[in-house]
Length: 548
View 1 (cartoon, rainbow, N blue to C red):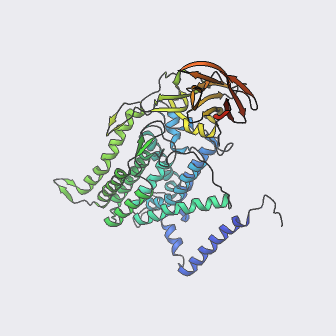
View 2 (cartoon, one colour; view 1 turned 30 degrees about the vertical axis):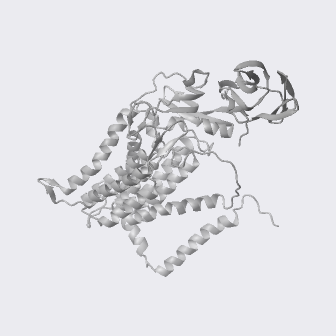
């Protein structure tokens, strides 16, 4: 078998663009547009190209590569300092809408942008909408200015709005992507549905070009519910801003779309883009999804959009026109979102101490520690209880605090660390980044709980720092009325034999192949398993934790 040089593309990577181009050529021949496609694009775009979309995409990509240092660490960019933690931390809310948590997040938002933003830019247009107008009469009508300055500037302003007026910390371009969807929806509802569907095709093609063949196998996986972490409030805010801007352009140009088409497009988009995923916390690793109310929310939003976009200038009552009522219908939910966002985003971490009371690793103003059952300072910043839910929630895991940047966050959940065993938390700022390593070790008692400990290691540390020890774990089997307990303490695991809740004897858990006798019971370590023997009876009492 001939071995190709590694720098040559795989046959499938060559075949994908060839097949796409050949199929487009065939479609062009069958459709015989006779220049119609190009003329239509050039009627709205300078030189027939959506330059504003391309400039915006390149700007977001530049933030990921150079500000978040994704160029040097593509899969693990710096994220903590680039979230919108508080109004008192400008770097966060200025860069949050253009930053991303990783390559999957980035590719998802950019493929959506590439699919939908050209349609929004087509509606906006690089040329005046009125016939006979000189496009170079003013700066705002100059197609070069509209393509390379005004459209990207509008994108930046909408991005900042999604950061400033979202509820709590957000990160990502998805709010702007939803604004593109809302803006295009009010003029081209069904085409917007097609464009959003095309996003999946673009993403799949991109991934196929990067890696045309992948292998998979059955394996254990850890993961929260897929809808956990969706920033629905940021998505809705972006969508409403886009709809409002689109309706304003419709009113100015005196254009109108069919109500049924618009309502249908709005409902289909809301469902397909998971705007119905209204969720909240129910505990440390438990969440609730209000799917039923989410569907009601999407349909209500579609009705508001349809009423606003199809309204005309006829008076509804007195001097109040239908268009004014339509705009008010859109402004009210936006006003509610802004009213909630301002007090939430004005909250501060202040001089918050390291949670849990244990030691922490300090890296240039960041305090990294591990704690369990501590109040989430960001979610609980304003104590509210309604509809059976509350903002007073607790969290467990690796916690990162930075008073100067108003950061308080769970960087790694307790469950994730228990599954992985070790991980890294990346902290940093503009121009620098450091990793704090995290390690968990534990013993699981048979028919009992798990005793475990957590260590941290800073970038300049020579040794691991012990930061947390769990409660002891009691094994289910008993021998001669004695219980076996695994107790974590000071970085080691001790084996206790108890009777009537009193410790009879204890010793460190032996090394692999070793043994120890406590209260007449012989404990033998075989690899990761620990066995107890007494009077010819031998049972397993514990096993060292295994990780993925």
